[in-house]
Length: 179
Image 1 (cartoon, rainbow, N blue to C red):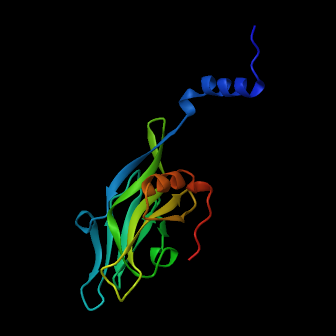
Image 2: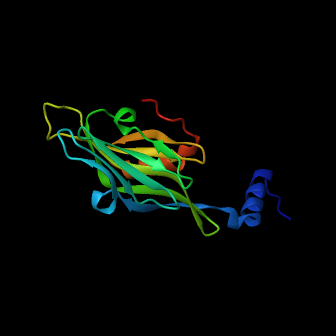
Image 3: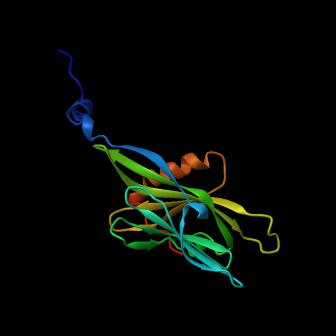
C-alpha cells in the first residue's frame, strides 16, 4: 500500500468530506444610472444636489449622492442601516462622477447569494485647470455584517478589473481606508 504525506491526506479528506461547503464567489451588477434610481431629493439651484435610491442585490440598496459636482455612495443594508462610503474623502475630493454600474461580489452557498464586496468606477477631475482630464479609479468596499467601507482604490491600468476583484474577494479581512 502506498503511503501519502499527512498534508496531502488532509487535503483529500477535506475535499471529499465537504464538497458542498465550497462557496463560489462571482459578480452581479446593478445600475447607478439616475434613470434607474428613485429620486429622494433634488435641488436644481446653483450648486444643486441630488440624492437617489438605486437598486442593489440581496436586500442591499445604494444611495447615490451628488453635491458641488462630486458624487459618493451610501450602502443601505437589508436592516436599513446606512454605511456612507465618503468617496470624496476616502478617494479624492476632486470633481467626480461614478460609473453607471455597481459590481457586487457575492458569495453563493446553498442557493443563497451574500454580498461580500462592492466595486464601483470613480472618475475624478483632480486638476481644476484641466476639466477635460480625469483619472479613473476602481473603488473596492468590503461588506460584512457590521461594516461597509472603502478598503482599496485601484488606478486605471492593465488588468485593473481583475486586480479589483481579487482585492474585493479578500476585502473582509482588510482595514477600512482612512480619509
